[in-house]
Image 1 (cartoon, rainbow, N blue to C red):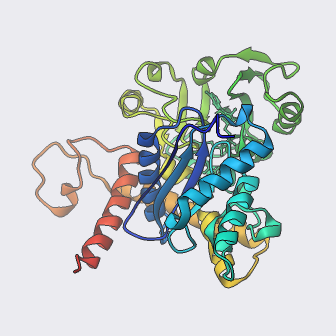
Image 2: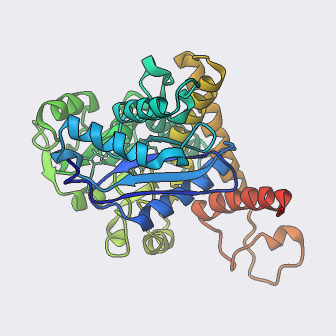
Length: 390
Ligand code: NAD
């Protein structure tokens, strides 16, 4: 029964409980990766002022070779093994790579059977609407990515690129996050020149229609082979000239060996950790802006938090309310990071006053360092205020 299930890992870090984070099913997931993704969730929640710590889970399995029945049994067994490590006030899982609302429905049902007589809906988010899921959760991460892009471009840091309309966009990954991002940007007038999935990519100079791509992918299992497109490898996709390059698949896709080939104005980290620290160095030297994952893809955890609040209050907000609240949170996070970035004064001399103290080796820091510093500061403040007891 568990021939494809080799290991199970779950990790929680954070200064606040409950912990919050996705559960990923992937053949290559490691304990180190889950730990690092859980930490990322801590910083993300802190930046968005969401009162959760970070958490993450993973099951080493290949969903592409598993039947629905096998996936259901794996999920139920995983949930029962987790026992009381998850719970509405302990750790609240959500979907991530190769998991979805069906996975969440199975987790909820298993947990509910093991904990009868309580309102267990807040144990998991990303549930189907019929089971207490939130309107807008499925599209939340993609919508959030687009809110952040819009807000960032409106700051006019790139004078020739102040709106989404007319921008040339390349997206790696065409799953829950990548496909919604493509659809929303397309409707706002962006030209989506290339997208890819695990089997490769497709390119069209005049732009692709994401709705047609989705229908094609539903029928053929991949975007590769879409009529009137040129087939490319995932590596080639990352090197295309564009305004916005949006990695929305796996971690570490832009690294020390290929960063110098990236030909974009802005990299928008829709995936978690798609750009390595080595790549960051190279991109920063070349003036390529990286909008970091902890801001860009925080829409998912934000609407997950909204779902949890709705479940606790036995309410269901309509889609307009969810999206309006999401937009407000995402704009606020982007504004906060941008303002802190603007605040930095670059100065080579010995710092003499508090303002000048906000320098980093005479060099303006990148947006990732700024976002992380805000989050770390918030976590440190909360930790110090709590103190140690007993
Ligand atoms: P998903 O499983 O729905 O989609 C993943 C996509 O990536 C698929 O199209 C798959 O074919 C593609 N892919 C896999 N391997 C690839 C490769 N080597 N090259 C190119 N494409 C490849 O997953 P998702 O939920 O869209 O998550 C994508 C990323 O976004 C992950 O890094 C995830 O952690 C992050 N993220 C997701 C959410 C969410 O709400 N789903 C929230 C925050 C962050």
